[in-house]
Length: 361
Image (tube, rainbow, N blue to C red; front, side, top):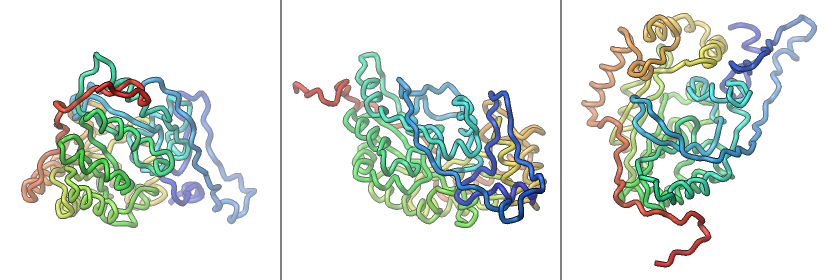
């Protein structure tokens, strides 16, 4: 374990440092110049979460990637306090002039107008419904949702419009909206994908410092399923020599909790994530670092990441193929279906552009 990595580790945070984004002209690096004593070095300063306004004028994002199962998505927040070190969305903070490291998990941008913007989009005569994904580059049930309730506001608009949607989360906070999700799930208008990365609570706290524990996620799957909401368990991401040995156990636990379908993704390390991930390995798994990175490279054509469609989600090579076969065998043995975003669009009814507008019918 490197000395500086140990110094910079912060309780409750995933990233070890705040490396400059790829568009910044300057970079900064902390160096021990020998003047500070050990107590000062080891006392990494606490980084508080800031919630800032996002003034986006549109709310729907379009997707044309053939390996992503939805065409449109909604993200009520930018950045995510869960702090998952592997999060493929971290590099999006570079567009804001911020770091993909600690900034991504401590400087959260909230789209306060998200429900109103969604209503305006759905009210357009040109709008045609297709299953929306609530998530994509942030978790809609990260801690700030307790107070702001923007995700709930989006669900309320979608419920009024009878519009189909799916949610991807790793938070048990989704149960706060069970009163809405239950009826919508039974009507074929909603489904949930819950990510369970590990069943080991200690590993989960290192991988995803402020996300719900594995036990609470499985409980969320159970309660959603019992309420009539179709649930998929996502064993994602699979990180070689860190959690990939748990694949079958995660799928079995998800099935036992009520999940009807499943999926997995090989860890992705695009752009700024690779160096952040290496720092994380230095801090938490120095003895495994060489093995983990070697297996990742073997699965990515000799690189830490390959962005090619068809390869970026699952990888290639011996290790990736073994993981793919293991998933298929477990999926068949457990009676799980492959994750699908197909939901009923026939119930859609265009809402009023302004929630204050009363219907004539």
